Image (cartoon, rainbow, N blue to C red):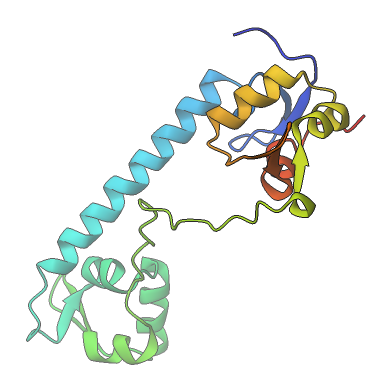
Length: 187
């Protein structure tokens, strides 16, 4: 891929350092930051599936649950649970070493159940206004951002930005173009 004639400065989503992006969709300053972010996401997925498995195996009829089950069920930390036990806010039974059981009904009065992450696998369709007053022409985009027409067309195809042709002019939505080139310094 040929190099661009402009520089895009971004902030790394993992380490926070500023870097010059090689492509429009670069998020990380290096391969190392990219790998660490990926590892973090995978660890979070694994943790969520483990917590879900624990919650599924808790019988509904049982009122006293372990601290580990309470963490999985309510999404609060162990330290918070032990602090509530010490203050006497939550009834607890200590059966033996590492066998503390706490009241599920009392915790459910105090805390909501752990929220599931929102499923973002399917994006909602976006409505577009392709009227000339809401759009840039390809020539305006290339003048404003100092980019070749062919590069603009390539980005429009790559990011599936809708276009409309009226006569000799091709129009693209201002909102999407501004978002695409937000880090590019206007000429």
